[in-house]
Image (tube, rainbow, N blue to C red; front, side, top):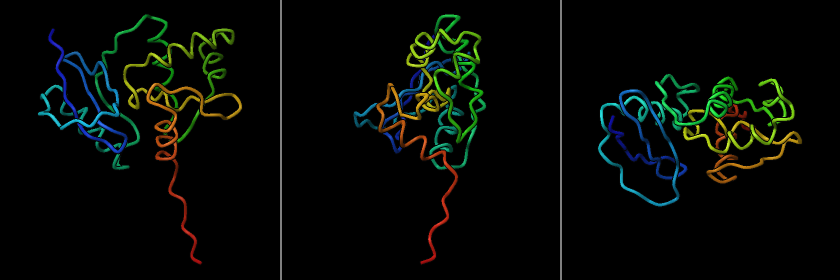
Length: 158
């Protein structure tokens, strides 16, 4: 089946979406400036939901996903989808959740190979000490995404 592609602009750069009738296969951000492209019908819902996320109108995604990966990677990516909006977990906690605390490096590697940035929220995984460790899109994007997902702070009246 042919994979279709679209480019949409986001606050973090141009987003490249790839997918087909089975679902969204890839969503990545690029620093390169690109023009928006026509959005194929099979990618329309994904583009709309991603736009809503960046506008602060969406906290979860309801999309058919079709990422390519090993069974272990897919297991890690499924666990990432259980991390609630506005929350974080550590690589250690994630490896424990998956049943093998010694698999922390394998979990981190699978996290880094996530082809569906933001939609499968790998940015919500941080170091055990609370540090922003590793993000394929750059730590500045990870920081932006985590701040974007925090509840609005009340402004000072004075």
